[in-house]
Every structure is written in structure tokens, then in C-alpha cells.
Length: 295
Image 1 (cartoon, rainbow, N blue to C red):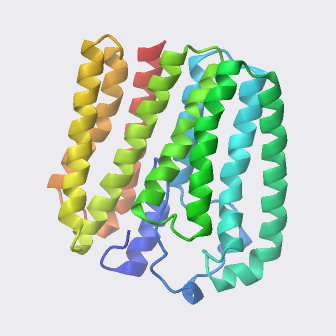
Image 2 (cartoon, helix red, strand yellow):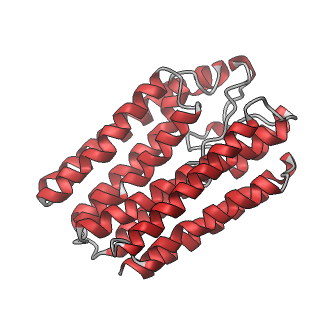
């Protein structure tokens, strides 16, 4: 995701991010040009990533009654999320300077967070119901595939970003089940977050490709519109079949409308931050619609 003025736009995208997954793209710059994070921070740089993990977790916790299993798995999810940045530094994805300056500390933090995630995840597993345990394999399997993409330096590809967003969103299912939510409600919430997060990635990719006038910008725009139409049709049919509540089906509408809007309006790179906030606002509307429609 690299617009015309690469340095300025990459900086803007890092701030705005894709609020569903928050994966900015500075991979096009040589590794030697990457600078260590300000102050040597090991926190995720893409601000949109925080929304990508926060909204699904809030949904999962709000749909049911809080339980110890939910809190354990919540802590584990946050630990894995925070371990992502140190892992990128260790692998050299943030450049040689960051690897040299922060590598040792990044290893300690990554190992500590991984141990914490295993401990909290294991405690949650021990206390969880059979259904919640089975559902936990969904984000674990997706996370395993994502880890392979990270280790092979392919996370910044379109499939990698889509997988990252879907992995973050899929945690809704086991955590919601751990709170006593029905399987149908948990799957609906997880599926909708997966759909809107994938749409957000396509919207950001298509918008930036269009700003840069890359050879694939029309293909990305067409893919975004096709996925939006497919999501609408699926929601319509599931609603008619009484599988999906009307308000829950409407939760996807903000992202469909944004996809249409950004396919029509040419977004200048300097307005990417505004675009990011519009996606965050859509996340809020989706959250409210899900909580009201599924309760």
C-alpha cells in the first residue's frame, strides 16, 4: 500500500491505518531506511491495529456474561497482539537499525509475552466449556498460517493483510462462547467482523492504488465492489431465512457505503487520516448494531 508521495503517504497510512487490521505498508522502503520506533517503543505502530483487536474483543465480552475464561483469553489475545511488533523487529521487518537497537529487548519482550499468552490461554482452556475449546482452534489455526506468512516476510501482501484481519476478528467466536453466548450468535458476530475487516482492507488498498494509479487499481476497486455486493446479498438471504437478525445484517452497511463512496470520490493521500477515522466510525456503528441486534 504505497501512494504517489511514498514517504508522506506511508507516514499518513501508518497513522490512519486500516482500522480493522491496522496494517500500514512501509515494506517498499529499503530496510536500511527504516528508523527505530520513537523512544525505542515496542508497541504496534499502526494505530488502526488497536481498533482491529479492540472491537471484536468488546463485542465478545459484551454479548454474554463476563467469565474467568473470557478474561484469561482476553489477556492472551492482547499478549499475542503486543508480541507482533517485537517479532517484526526480530525478523528485521522494521529495518536493520531497529533490529540492531531494539533486537535484544524485543526478544525478551516477545518471549515474555508468548509465555504469558500460553499460560493464560492454557488456564482458559482448562476452565472452558467443550464448545469454547473447539472454537478456539479457529483463531489458533488462522494464527498459525499467519505466523508462517510473517516468518516468510509475506504478511504485507494482500492475502497476508486479509488473513491478519480475519484472525483478529475470529477471536470473537471462542470468547463469546466462553461467556455463555449461543453458537449461532457467536458465529454471526465473528463472521460479520471478519467480513467488515476484510472489506476495510480492500477499501484502503483500492483507495491507495487509485491514488497512485497503479496497474491493478481498477482490479482492486472491482474486487472491493464485488465483495461488498456479495456481503449484501449474503446478509439479505440469511435475513430472509431467519438466520440473521435484521439489525445484525445492517451492521455491514457502513462498510458497504464506504466502499461505494471511496470508489467514487478520489481521496488525496494527505486525507488518508480522515479516511482512517471514517473507518473507525464505521466500526463503532457496526459494534452498536451487533450488540443491539444479537441480544
